[in-house]
Image (cartoon, rainbow, N blue to C red; front, side, top):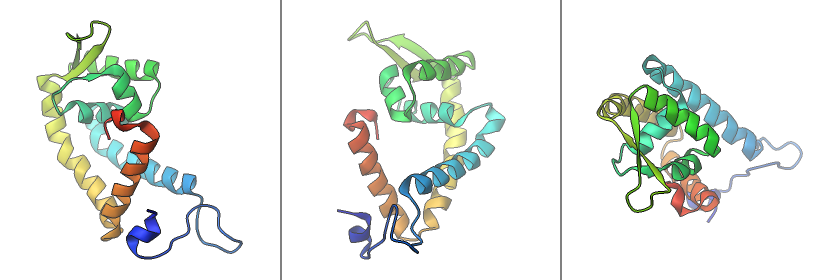
Length: 162
């Protein structure tokens, strides 16, 4: 079901006919992502975190421990980039790694006590930023987030942690 059908009206996405006001999907998503990232960066910078580092902390906050490959897929970065991100979090004592007891080839990442506290401090701030952005669309905002989440799951597969 498309966005227009869910929202009860038709909306054109992507390149439209001449004179259309619809913007290309990639441009729209990119603009919103960059704006959201800038807002979040402004609130987490005092902790010395980047948005990608925040995303890792947020995933690890469930306390379950996650394989590095899953983290890379979820935040959509190559494995070597994720390793650098996690290395910095380990250096800051926010994250630690353990070899998976069930599969000695896998390394799991966990939040440290300090990481849990940083996450607890920042999570409400980040949630408020995201809620403010979504609320600008009124009742359509939550529907949009739900639909984009479904699209992300389709692209990444259900193992990506969405």
